[in-house]
Amino acid sequence: MGRRSLGLTDIEDRIQKACAEAGRDRSDVSLLAVSKVQPNERVEAVLADGHRVFGENKVQEAAGKWPDFKDRFDGVELHLIGPLQSNKTRQAMELFDAIHTVDRPKLAKAIARIAQETGRCPELFVQVNTGEEPQKAGVPPSEADGFVAECRALDLPIKGLMCIPPATETPSLHFALLRKIAERNGLSGLSMGMSSDFEQAVAFGATHIRVGSAIFGDRVYA
Ligand SMILES: *Cc1c(COP(=O)(O)O)cnc(C)c1O
Image 1 (cartoon, rainbow, N blue to C red):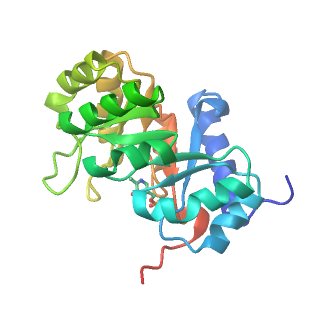
Image 2 (cartoon, rainbow, N blue to C red):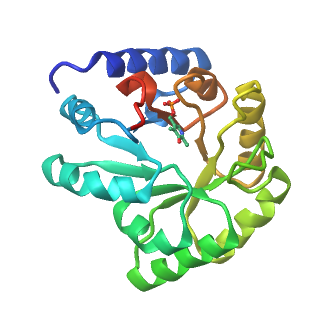
């Protein structure tokens, strides 16, 4: 569809190259364009280029702009990649097609209750705090198997795992750890890799990469 914006074309080339080097199919990697904080014009330009898969990290912010974009562009797929407060669970489940940040029993139970009631549930990822950083969300690696089992006991459709490696460490170690935990739990989805490291993430098996600034430009916080 039309000419693609520079950022998107460049990222697409790099994903294709990374897939080729890893012997993977391009179609096995979903590119989430992370549009948080970006001005609407930039998001609209990427939509006009034909891209349809987006990531947002706040329910409130996404609720403010995506219903309108969804009205105007067909086939939008929206992923929540930021922390979810239990009291926003229902709103998040209405707005998002996938939630990457399931990280505690209370939230899992809230999702299960609403899914039962509505008959509908987004695709889910369990967030793992691979670096065991106190300020970061996610279950510690040692509790991941137990939490995945708990989610499955609630009949939740767990698609895979998600991580955000510590900024100061080699991301590949964290990608490898996430993959290992996913494999032993029989999970096929791996949500990992951002602007600075998505090629490495693809090499380690990422199925969902979350790329913001490399597509849209730097985020400008007011
Ligand atoms: C903002 C964000 C991204 C995208 O970050 P960039 O460095 O701009 O690519 C990816 N994942 C999560 C969880 C984020 O919050």
